[in-house]
Structure formats: C-alpha cells, structure tokens
Image 1 (tube, rainbow, N blue to C red):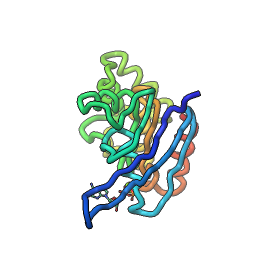
Image 2 (cartoon, rainbow, N blue to C red):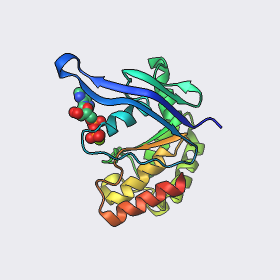
Image 3 (cartoon, rainbow, N blue to C red):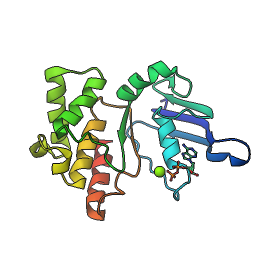
Image 4 (cartoon, protein in one colour):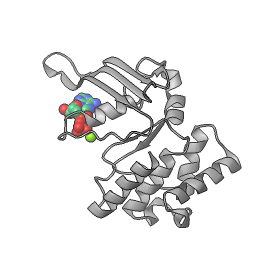
Length: 191
Ligand code: ADP
Ligand code: MG
C-alpha cells in the first residue's frame, strides 16, 4: 500500500551564505493512513518548518512531498489553496479561531472553503462538534470557551473536509496537562 504521506530528502534553508539556517535537512518520512506520528525536538530544531512544508504553506528548498499521489512541493501556487482546504487539517498551539464567529460557524467556514455549503455545511459542523464533545457549545464564541474547548473546536474545524492528514503544531502547549492529555487522546481516537 502506498503511504498517505511520502516525504523524500526534504530540506529548507532560510537565507544564504554565512547567514544560512538549515532549518530542515534531508528528511525522509512515510506516514500510513491512521498512523499518529509525534515529532520531538528542542525549540528551533525545525518542527514548525517541517509541518508548514507538509501542509503546503511553505515551499521546500529541495525534496519531494507526496500526498494522494500529488507532489505538493512542486504543485503550482494557484492549486495550493484548494489542496490545503481539501487534504489537510491544521491545528495550532494558539487555536487560531475566528473571534467574531461562534464554534459552529468556525467549522462551517472550513467546510465552505472545501466546497461544502448551506445546510450540508451546517449539519456537518454540528456532527463534528458532537464528535469532539462540544455539541452544547456550538453557539459560543471563542472568548466564551475555555482553552481545551477552543482546541476541540479547532479539531472539529480541522476535520471539516475529511482530510488525509491532520497537522498539529504543539496542540497542547497552551493547555494545562490534564486537558492536554484529553486533547492528545481525542486526536489519537480520531486518527
Ligand atoms: P521549532 O518549531 O522546532 O521550534 P522552527 O521550525 O520554528 O523550529 O525553526 C527552525 C529554525 O529555522 C530556527 O533556527 C529558526 O530561527 C529558523 N527560522 C524559522 N522560520 C524562519 C524564517 N521565516 N526566516 C528565517 N529563519 C527562520
Ligand atoms: Mg515550532
């Protein structure tokens, strides 16, 4: 079986000459469907740079990234927004929810970007919020939610288009440890 994600000799260098920073150097990585991979390393070791490249948000200096038989390292710029919306779910340390929208609307908007609109988007958002245990908070805005609840909304949003890959950058760093463990458990269950 081909892996869901195939990364070959992936590198990213910021700057050049004496100031060059080799943030990611010749990484090889295969990830299968349903697999959970944790990437560990000290601050500055290139974790965020790697995730941004895997999610087609940052162009590699060299190497290949294949997702669903597509090389996203070299895909034309104009195709990237659609690829991001359809194939990837992103979860950030600081949640990145839209403050003017309630939980359900945050999830619906992601579905809209993936081409699902109207009643279908609304019922999908409701189903996903239920899946992450937040049906009762669907019409709360982010400032009315706890950190753990916000991250659950972000997880529901990441799932909005049934992505091949969920990329999470230190998703529990801003949560206290027992809530962080709940979030990690939820992510494993969803995978
Ligand atoms: P981590 O997420 O593991 O803390 P990063 O991927 O953020 O590490 O950073 C890896 C290295 O790349 C660091 O030395 C950082 O300073 C450098 N770096 C990250 N982004 C940029 C950028 N846009 N321009 C220049 N250097 C960068
Ligand atoms: Mg980082």
